[in-house]
Image 1 (cartoon, rainbow, N blue to C red):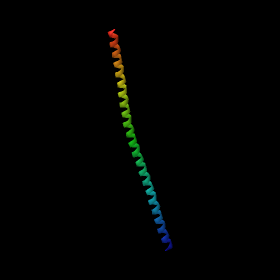
Image 2 (spheres, rainbow, N blue to C red):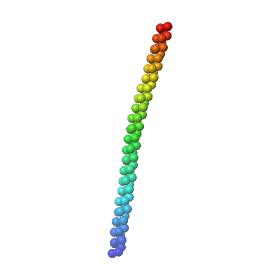
Image 3 (tube, one colour):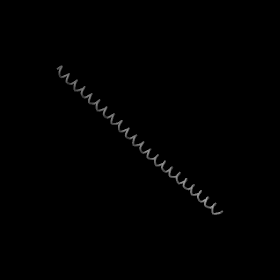
Image 4 (cartoon, rainbow, N blue to C red):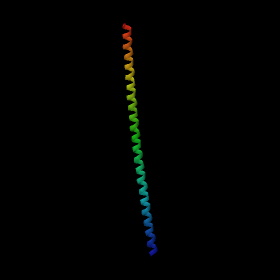
Length: 82
């Protein structure tokens, strides 16, 4: 009778350990998935920022080129008027 009780206790302990182990694995997987989701979100945000900055840089470059062109045209017209 004692050995039967002991084997049931061991079985319960093993089941508890296995349940705890599985719970820890699930918690770890959940943490990994949340981390991956955050990384994907951050990557998307960085790509959006990059495209905004490159668009902004392009606009600035175009403005600089247009200002240079205006200066050239103005200088040319001043020289032609002489």
